[in-house]
Length: 370
Figure 1 (tube, one colour):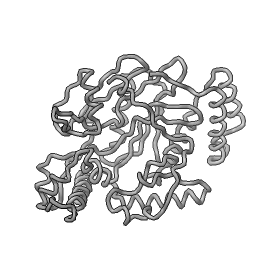
Figure 2 (figure 1 turned 120 degrees about the vertical axis):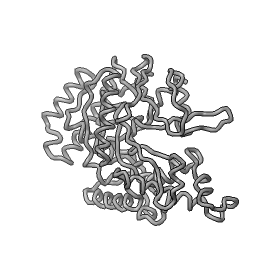
Figure 3 (figure 1 turned 45 degrees about the vertical axis):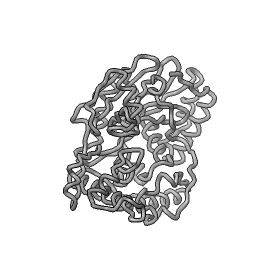
Figure 4 (figure 1 turned 90 degrees about the vertical axis):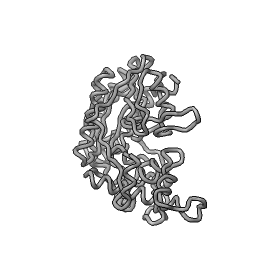
């Protein structure tokens, strides 16, 4: 995997912009003249520089605030950051990822948590992760073209199986973590059971729904995006947060390209699925989302509904405006897939402006292996 790093001139310019941003937001604590001179000297000598722990933490928070993809940015300043830049082996990185999952789970009271590993540098290939999330369910492609499990991970599952991993073949098998440094052979690590918090899906008024055996992991931990702060790139900086109920009930379990459970739920509800005019899809989707809310509440796991999340986002927007900052957002990604027009973000419009620090897509390492 080829690593392309910006020139020293680009890094220097972006480092100055970032440090001046910290001075604007944080006063002298964020950037002093002495610190800026130190960074310039370090870049002149080595072509790059190192963030202080304070700079890294603040940069991570701002990156979350700047991402146009997230509805939950009201809490951006509460993000906790673990500095793991010193780890150098895939085994050490895996242990740190397991610890992230345990700390983020927090007995069900989900913590906003990010772990940052080494920045990419010349002569030191970074450790990359194959998984787009730390916890994902496998997708087993069948001879007839159907998928048992999550179709979104079918290609990744096949690539991991080619490395020798074999799952049980159920719809909710947790995939292992695959880590790889540069062009070295990838390493496969199975997550311990106590690192994966899952919630069985039941319904408060439809007891038969429990028989479907649905479950979902308690929180997302996005792990495939590149974190960019002040000209430096961190290829592995997984971020754990809490779910909105609609993400699971109205997307992950409902989408035709995912678990596609609406027909099964509708059949259990006795709905007429012969025509869309009965709105069977809408009714089944609603009850799936009700089931997700009920299940997380029953298990004492943090989860927010889309109405609350939308109100908090608007509060965030108002607060940011008072500081003179814009609120980058991708409208299609922050409007709820269920009841969207009943939320306050429906009639608002946003520009998905790319500000820095931020998160950026990067090619999946496993794609080159398959």
